[in-house]
Image 1 (tube, one colour):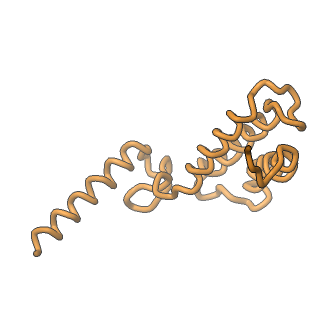
Image 2: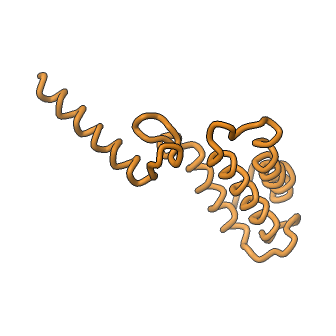
Length: 126
């Protein structure tokens, strides 16, 4: 038996649609993106994608109901993991990818190289 904390309707009304609207509107309402327009437009694109996902999901508030609800939940989990992983969104200097011309794979490989160098230097001291 499946135990759910949040029903499909509550998930749609209180999470999906409000989060999508906030992701689209917040950069403009809070005047974000002046120093990094990539971050502002990334928020808008993710918000539009979230709005489309909610509208196309087979739940009570879905408009077209093409995407099965289980797939919707997996997309939510994946996007939540990405949003909660700040090290994926910054490179070794701490800036956001795209603002310094670096990309995510390069950022990750630089971080791994620095980690290896640090561990080697620590081992040499002992």
